[in-house]
Length: 362
Ligand SMILES: [Zn+2]
Ligand SMILES: [Zn+2]
Image (cartoon, rainbow, N blue to C red; front, side, top):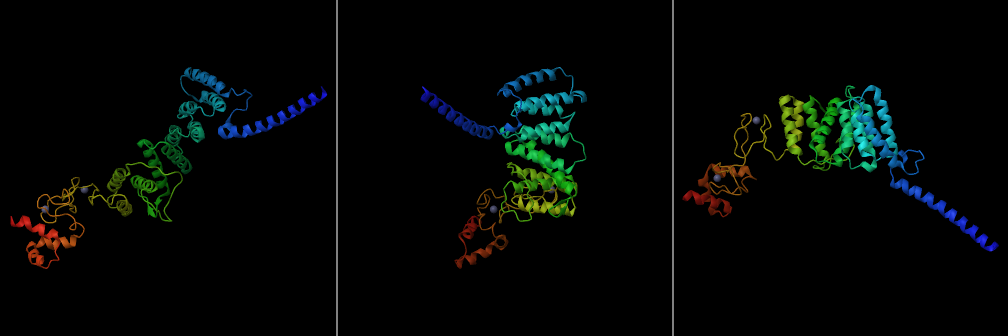
């Protein structure tokens, strides 16, 4: 009888020790799983936080439905209710989105705070809207003469939104505009003074293009800003358009011309651009179709000047290869075709020259 009692007590003590150990282990694991555990309300709700927040959310919707507008008088109350919901459920996506929207006009600071809190929540890292809205309010609704810190924060938020979903051009545009504002504020871009907004916009786009990894091995002095790189497929047309606008804004400004030079060299090197208005022109064009400026002709047959459609000229059979690569050699061959005949005897002449002769005889 006495022996079994001792056994019972020992088993109870072991169970209690094991239970305590397991509890502490589980608490650590739970905190790892619930990344927002520290934000959770400390009220003794016995694990019914989510349920409580749902009830609070319904009451909140009901309360907001009764309001005619968000005013100075009710901002405090709305904020209090919203915080109570988020304290019980820090992953309440809808509460962040809707709550932030409600404050965006009447109290933008609070709106930014709510959106940012949602954007920084690791459980909502797929939501691109929260960081985008935060950036949007930071750039549109706060009127403190473009505080540099605020713009920096806005850029961070836009970048965050774009890394979550880079399929939206309006988010990309917002990011570039904010970036351009910051460059314009600094008044300097890689040693080139910034002339105007259009110039700053081109610089911002070019920076982003470099950052997107299309060009590798940035030099040690190349500026790299924070955040992950963003990949948007249609950089080239955007950069071309920005370059055209920058040039049109101050056609003779040497700083803008220097920037455009650099951009064309790196991004638009495969395009043939009008030297005056930077419009792309096609093979065989002698003048720019947009401004009428004479342009350097390319893509024509070295012999008959017809536009080349493939490897051989469709008008005279002249091959494109070898001629295009060495224009200096091509010139005399075109200038005096009879000279080909004696040269043929020397056996050094390429088969290309023979083919040139065939249509001549016919
Ligand atoms: Zn032109
Ligand atoms: Zn030809």
